[in-house]
Amino acid sequence: MNNNPPKYLLRQLNRIYRSISHPYTSLFILVIIIGWFMAGGTVHFNQTWYKWFHIFEMTVTLLMIFIIESTVEADNRAMQEKLDEIIKKLPQTDNNIIGIEKEYKGEED
Image 1 (cartoon, rainbow, N blue to C red):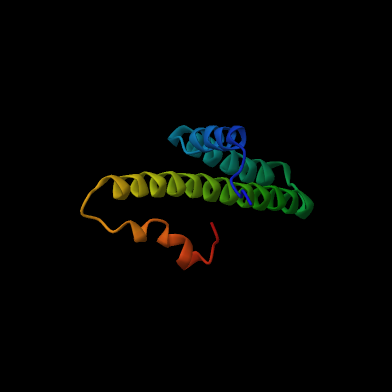
Image 2 (image 1 turned 90 degrees about the vertical axis):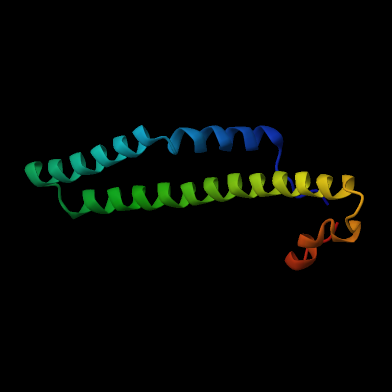
């Protein structure tokens, strides 16, 4: 069974990850949060506005966790395949250790 996500999905997640990990994106988000709280103090947003902002913030945070995890997993998978290829090519290595990480994770080939 193939558990790898489609390549176009990985490309899109990597594109999103690169754009949100840019320093200007962090600065932009910080300005929005500070502006939201300043506007709430001056126009007297009620508690409902703060609850909606908190729900939005938590949703974005959860999505970001999944995006970061998927890109890290894809990077780790690619690096593991490269290391397996290096092990295969070196004459003095034991080829039995190729794919040993699957044994520790409880995965099947």
